[in-house]
Length: 242
Image 1 (cartoon, helix red, strand yellow):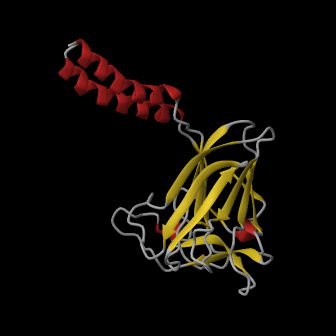
Image 2 (cartoon, helix red, strand yellow):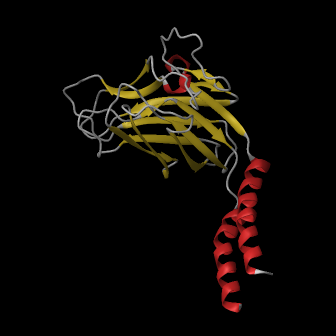
């Protein structure tokens, strides 16, 4: 095969290989928009999502039970889950997820005399298929929380994702503050998402926020990754034989 022709078609093959598995297996089985408990916004929930607030804690959405709890960290005894509803951001340009980004649930302290350390929140998802990997996406943002806010999340004890945002930098697109990772359920079909405040945060700043959550059954297939790795090798070998 002509080298120039090979160079021209390999990128297309890679793009198709990466896209096709996701199209074939993608299925969002849960999409929750975390709202403020006392919000009076109309509308308050982003279209395509189900509204969920602290008063719904322990109830099921689409057959999946969602349970949330604050988790105390070192020298912390008063962490609690609270919710807020902001007036910003608003829908503009590529940003249509204004109802996701303007309200959220977060971890706060009741005793301001105690410093924030490494506490956070647990979100337990029950009713999933046992021993199955899922793509988890968390949205995290608060327009009234300036400076970088970082939280480290695990799924059943394994690294899942980090949420990182600066409230002084508003989102301009729907996925700007969306963070994804793959978590696998246990034998009982439970996925425990544990978010902990990073010690890199500024002293006194809460950092565990969640505006929305989605669960997707799509997982990148090994064949796609193999093609990405193999393509440069194919080109290199072709060059050597010319």
